[in-house]
Image 1 (cartoon, rainbow, N blue to C red):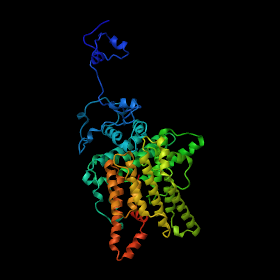
Image 2: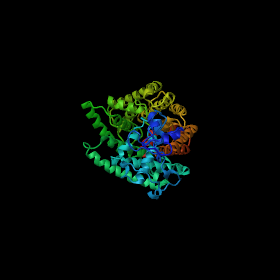
Image 3: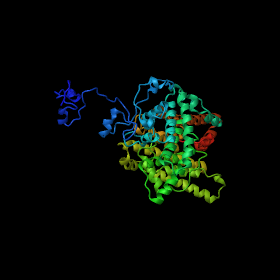
Image 4: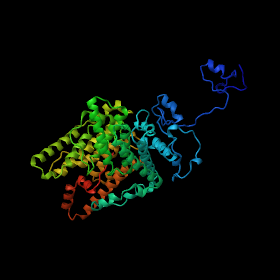
Length: 538
């Protein structure tokens, strides 16, 4: 048996005397170790897995994940292009360090790979409350995207738009809302809202638009041949396109995506109930997320008529599946109440209906309000703990209290809009203050902080108190800083417009009696409808 000078790498590290056997050290063999040999030792530095169970994991985190450390997140290295305030896509690949290319991504251009990296490092964590191993199914979409072009383009679109938002200058991120518009000019105000007008990163913005268009074309073809298509990939692409609209502004275009998702889900549920098929965990997650956005979308939409009828047990079960880690943390029991209230609100010419129909609708609306008031946030939060990725009982209770109170305000305003003479048991200004009190328990850095947008928007619409309005304004500014999703910016813009309109109305009053009459008859349901747009607040 031959020998060579020098110790093997194992013995050298352990400061042991090596027997220098070839091809491997016998001391290593006797200790049960794999001898690393005598030559140059090659080692990966912060490499990222792009396939398999370790997808999105850097070499620094692999040990943590394998040892069951749930604090290690599956994050890709932050792209080099984000290291400066004005990232550039014009540098050639020859300027980047050479690295081994995974066969799965060898056909994907460098620009797209950067967006995939950004999706893994920044976008994925925004799509859930807790971005920890085994609790963020959106990371499973990355390896799937290599085989599904429509999903790849949807990921690139959402990633590029997110990057465009995050690169906006802080001084101008809310500049489009500095001018207050009256309710009379609200339509022109809404039309002026555009990310493209304020972005400081036009390359990413244009990439987002191109990728979205490609995703829509590919999705249209896939839906046309559903029998042979990958349904999970279709649902994932639709869900990401809904997310794209939220990252953009949360206005208008999301409706077509939700209608498409609803059509697919209805077919899946119908076929599953007939055959007894159980959804896979990934499909259940995709369906449940689409359903949450579907029901939330009914709350502030003008041209959106929610589907009627009581939700099936399957649908309710799927909504409950989403409670644990959906970014809204909206209690499943409250979501159908929003949909039912919107259904009543969207009855055309309610005053032209027979008295019996009016009385029936009034009774139904009051029953919805009673059901919302009966919801128990503490019991909900306690029952949710086994399904929550973290021990968050207090924060879950607070967020549930805020959602319950906000739903009560929402339903109360619908009732007063349709039946103004109704005497309600609660002072809505007090309820608005209660929402703010509950939400004040959540601070930037808390996992559930980003789940406060919907109740905060309701509180902002309702409150007349200037201090409370200032609190709501700060909350949406903080949400924008944490997650650059355009719907938070546009929601604040809508609130400022409504507040400005109310201020102008007060200035036009000629007497105290006229002022109190205006305040008594004012209803933000009507004001939102006059804005002429469809809002998705999540």
